[in-house]
Image (tube, rainbow, N blue to C red; front, side, top):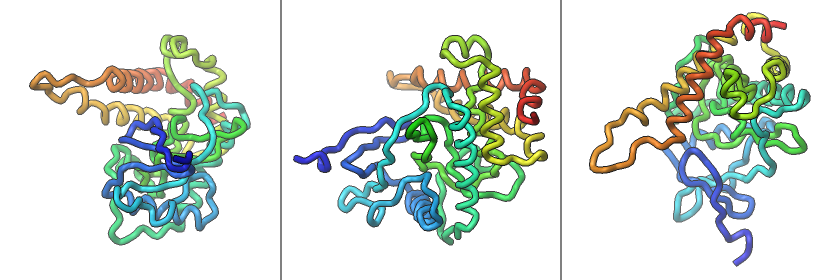
Amino acid sequence: MTDDQVEVPLLSARGVVARRGGTVLRAAGPWSATVQALLRHLEEAGFEGAPRVVGSGFEPGSGRETLTFVEGGFVRLGQWSDEAAHALGRLLRDLHTATATFAEPGDATWQPWHGRDLGRRPRVFGHCDTGPWNVVVRGGLPVAFIDWEVAGPVDPLVEVAQLCWLNSHLHDDEVAALAGLRPLAERLHVLRLMIDGYGLTAGDREELVEHMILVAVQDAAALAPVTITPQAGGEPGPSRSVVHGMAWRLRSAAWMQRHWDVLERAVRT
């Protein structure tokens, strides 16, 4: 059996994912065809920061979706260089520019996502899960977003807020110390560079902090049903990772609310 025939499991928060040679395979959902239409558009538009659809997009027999594997690594705990932070903001801007000409299929089906209805701006088509776990880097620079399952319509400022919040690691001092994060001043510098890279307008900068807090709260709330579902018949309760995920999101939201003025100065400078 050759390497191209061997399936290697890949880490993913959403379902079972495997790699076979240069192809990534995962279980398809009702939204897969629509997401693939978006990915095909991105390829046609010349946007290189996304995987490509392989063949028909679905593996014969199993029905799993097939996308190209994006080579590279990941950045640990917000250790973005100045150049990389600016490039990450630019990557998101380029994505929004490329999707501006996407003709949504008449039978489009997008996966439900808690951020879909946030914000009041005209929608763009975004990735919608832009944490560092979904940003592939090469040579220290971000080159692509992966794991497009929740892609779809989004207020662009909501997605900018998500990108900035998750990649600048805005946490209180205790969490920062436990996680080994950079000093706050450096994390705020990274935040500012991402905003500059995206080219956020002065008006949108005035609302960014509010949107980061909103995104953090809604992100935490999305995990709540998992933790409060009654367990019966000896079934295990929510995993520690789910509880931990909800906790750090809520602590981050609370910290941002307490330090609103600090963040406002950082994003407007």
